[in-house]
Image (tube, rainbow, N blue to C red; front, side, top):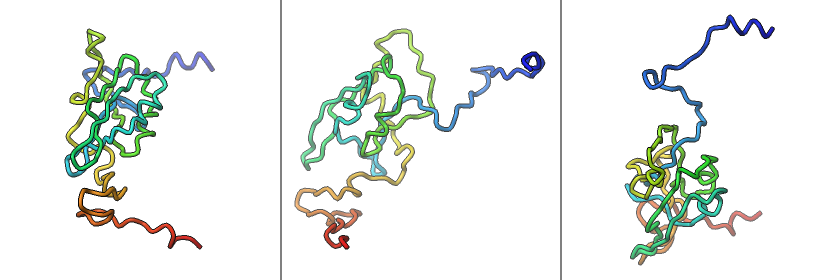
Length: 162
């Protein structure tokens, strides 16, 4: 049986001349996404940094005038990242997403430290219609929950009881 493998056709991909076929669930480069409105999705909850097994994510929380949080800086050290995907699973706003991009080679180790500007993409990523603030019903200054434009009404959990 083992000798039959010697006569089988080899499957060599001629990268970079031919594109590489990665698996559909491949975990590659991490990006920060935006809402459909164009705002940052990250609310600086620090869950991604807490769940990271190698501690390659660091961020600092700041607050807008309307009370919403955002990361003042967001930094990922890709020389330490093991691309486990735990940060994507922990993110409550789907701000962190792993893409199938794998071409991240650099000549200097310092170039593998990506800042917020390097990570932030212009689109919503895998979830184009998701908007965290519309789903959570967070209050905006001067308005109660559920009164803002395009915001879902808050659910009355007491009426759901049997």
